[in-house]
Length: 258
Length: 186
Image 1: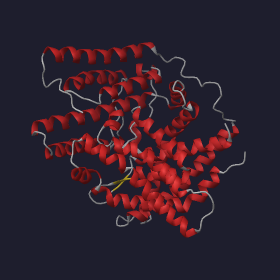
Image 2: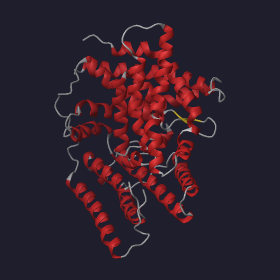
Image 3: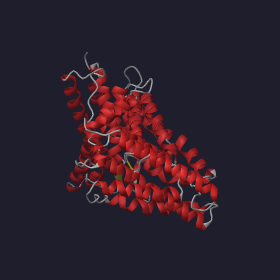
Image 4: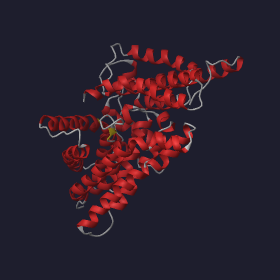
């Protein structure tokens, strides 16, 4: 569970907390699209933007879980070795591996900012309001499903760790027989989640849950226009600045890497 | 919403959460640790049926695309889907459908045949993840076929066998419970 604490909602009253979840979702998708191709210019412009958002929370960032701390090093090494083993020059392999690692860190950072400032209770209506505009998609069912799964992820992670700890304490965890471990861990886990599914569906049936109910409310005080303008303006400045400056003189600063 | 639809929605949500949570959970075996994500992707189709499985994996991909850290190792974003391992994520959509159809044929079957179908379903579904995965890896990293197979398949073979054997055993053991949950009176 400690591994996922970083991605849990922390109540607050910062600008990000007060921003509409749909706007945050759209900005996150737009930024991850911008990050498909990375350049030093793009990343160095994104860094102050993310720092600014982080500072607006007015609290120290949560320490990342241990596996996440090792991940950048793993990504850099893996990318560098695979590129260096191919046809790439050593310097080019270094730069590409470095940029891919920074991109990974930024995506993780954005996700952390989003989950830390978005109330899970408002996620389902936000998903519904976004998905209902897409034709042929059962927006009600999918948004319910997305909202439910987000609430269940920490519960299931905790259950997984509890089962593993119980197995270890009873000497039932044998590193030499991973198949046995998986079956012995999977059976109580799947039985446990089925019980949760039964309880959840009983509760929904008892409340006469329907897809066609009144649209659930988002936070009344959430602001839409300001964060949408700020996000769009930032992405516009980033893309326009890159276009104009890279035409005036080509430099490795603007070279894009996939 | 009918009782049947509610149960299918809830089960799909549970499998989405299981798939997402398992990306943080690794089992160290040899040089390449086992990540349980693919096992639950396969199980979502075998235990929930092809469409519940497809819906669960679709939701999992949506959560990842919008930037929530649910992909392997706590990563996220559309860049991950477009990156070298994106093909494996697309393969996740094929696995539950195949596993669900193979393991859940209409009519009652003998016990021996059920075991055979569980093994066949789990291994076929698991293998389908690699069908778009390896060519995508080869294309995105401009590799030749032997290098792509070396990077994306060979180190994962022991994990593939262990996870799919476990998926087959679990699906066979728990099929009845999950089917009873899904069979509800209107």
